[in-house]
Length: 437
Image (cartoon, rainbow, N blue to C red; front, side, top):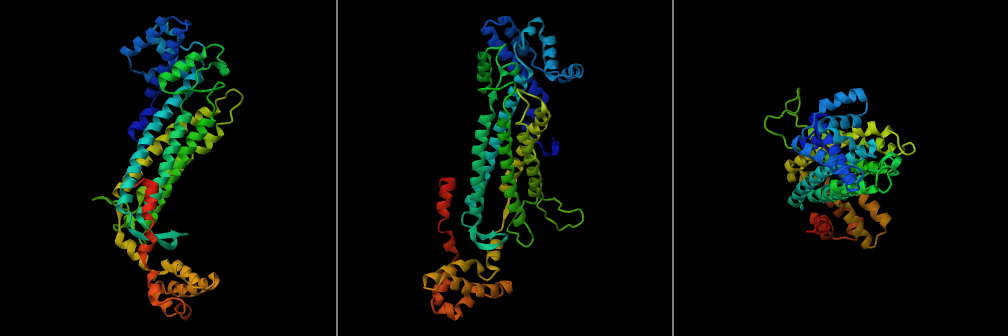
């Protein structure tokens, strides 16, 4: 975790204090359930909660000092709690194993992280929708292979991004549900030394579902799916970031990141206004995706458990969620403040002499009775003259003077095929599909 790319609320989830608080809640709720079953005295559970109510501070250095001796984090924590609570603490952790605490805690942390990420996505979706509505009918060029294709609107570009992130939100909701499971099943997951009712009680208190079969750990296919979803969200971030980066190129300059007063673009060249935020987002997306493969590899653990997954998750849990949280916040800011240049968009639309309307002429010629192959050849031979003149020639005028075209289409017919508004007649339909309005 790097502070430069971190935000406080997400960082807090992964701090030792939060982890130990969750551990305590797991142990105390389990002791409550054990007391209700008559396995331990009720005074044991009461002692835990009484101490917690009056002394809710976690002494992380003290626990770390114990772990330096025990070489076991859960035992170090239990030892420290026992030192605070006294004799009644001996009933903690009855029939449980370390994974019951660690895995259930990780489930809580990932659900907490999910809630922040879902709020991030909501903010991003709201920003994209606002700008999409603003530019619903702002004409711009659509590109395929990076080459001018046919007209679109800038609003449609943003509507596509909105739909993509809306799908990501649905996936994250599903991933949150899949990861939010509790396992309090004891060694190798047989419940031999702890009643399944304890697991059900803890799960209910923590807002988790019961893991149907946990061996000694919660199956890691759940975690693999979770981090895969984070990776997909990161890829969507990068896709939109790359769009902005391309649009900010000097030769294009249809949109650009906000450049604040006093901001500097280059230590050497005072004129520079670089797309540093979206370039940064491309890098951050790579880091989030780097968690996906290790999460997939964690699925294949030995028998009922091993700890080859543990070190991996200590990295990717905090790093992926903290980085994605920061990236979503940064992208939201980029979209909210994005400078959009409709005049430049129109200039770029016009710079290639009307080539963007070639398909309409092709279709008109086929409808007028010329074969598709001949229609394509006729339009292309004129289009290449425009291409090779770098837009100095006009496709419309060349077509008007082409005998093969003139034999089938009047000058007015040709001009009608160069109407920009024709391309936008279904924008409302697309917006209705995406935004419901």
